[in-house]
Amino acid sequence: MERDRMGASLKHLGIPPYDYRVLKLLPLIWVAWADGKMEGIERERIRNLATTAYDLSPAGVAVLERWLARVPDPKYFAEGVHDLYLLARAGDEDEVNVNELPGLLSYAEAIARSTAMALDQPSSVSPEERSALEQIARELHVDHGMSWARLLEDLRDR
Image (tube, rainbow, N blue to C red):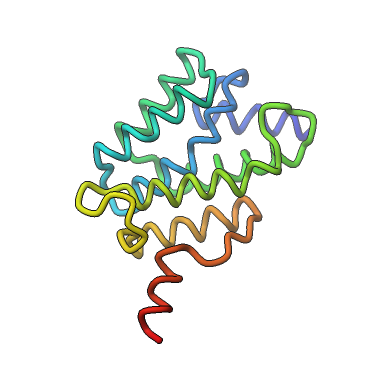
């Protein structure tokens, strides 16, 4: 039953069933588009991670390129990240492990800090990106604690 639901969801998302690993990049895409635009440095870093860490087929690369070119609908993001969580919880997929979900959230935060103006500065995380990170953490059931940006703000305010 769960496998049928997952297959239907992947089909709805336009992801070939054998390329479900591309879902690991969706949290990064969500954060990159959170402010309504995707910067070149964000695209570059996401493509680099996809190339070095994931063995995507040409169809998986096409899904990624579609995400990089045009912002998916908010419901699409939520459905895809929820599917990622379900795959990780299933435990029968070696390609998606529940232990790597906090790391994916950290990668997403790193993408949020990727701006041409303030490369890798924790303070460069916008309110929209912060909101996206919080939504991703909820969907992945990950307590990501306090982001670097929020920590620096709290220290500055004291």
